[in-house]
Image 1 (tube, rainbow, N blue to C red):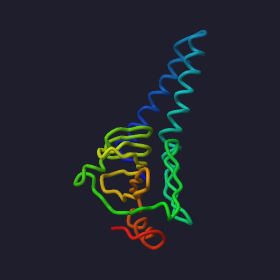
Image 2 (cartoon, one colour; image 1 turned 180 degrees about the vertical axis):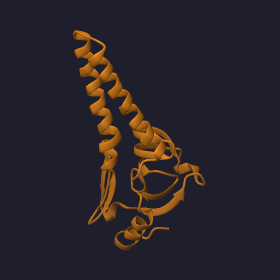
Image 3 (cartoon, helix red, strand yellow; image 1 turned 45 degrees about the vertical axis):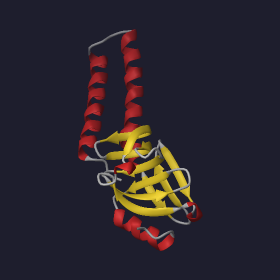
Image 4 (cartoon, helix red, strand yellow; image 1 turned 90 degrees about the vertical axis):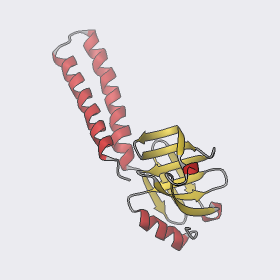
Length: 166
């Protein structure tokens, strides 16, 4: 799933700020403070690179014998066909009950959502979407709200292998 351009620009901006901070520490400061600053800034930079660039690149939906949803490091779900109670397409601007209300563990920026969220209807959901039109997969204890880059291909594959999508 592609990140919105605003989020990508923000990620690069923060990374640039961290690099500038490290350069200032190396060339302006001296002593123990420099070392501690470099270690701290380096640790933050490594974490930022993982959360902003590496993990989003690994976000995917795999349709095989089971449906697998990966939104690292926030959620990983494997769903067998028998576990799916229903599937339908919703635009949460039209049906606000499926709109995310609160982030439990995930990333959110504009319309981009990846991870675990609580919905306005009180249910829990794993969301992987970069807009408001999502494929809702109903499970016994939660929902999966999915909108990968190949949205129509996912809907067609679910229709073919798992359950009719309304």
